[in-house]
Image (tube, rainbow, N blue to C red):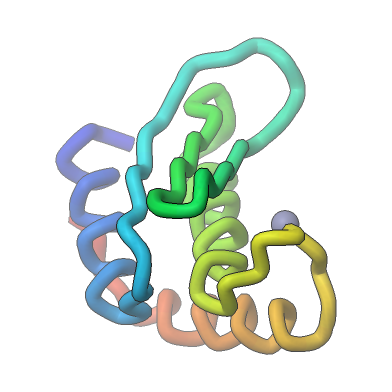
Length: 99
Ligand SMILES: [Zn+2]
């Protein structure tokens, strides 16, 4: 995935599912086996997506983390509210053209 495609994806995600807190999204390269890291310091959410994943895995990780931020689930659990939101984001995402 090119930088332009990635930026287009994050821009469209922010437009489709606006959130009330500032979110800083970056990709990073790590050979360690984890897809993403998201932290909230009380003011800003920091989302880091591992770029060693395939393009579709990176997008999947991004949508997963975004669902946490949309529901302001700072405990990072995967309960019913988070699951419903994640499903809604995926449903909307099917029609997004990120190129
Ligand atoms: Zn999660």
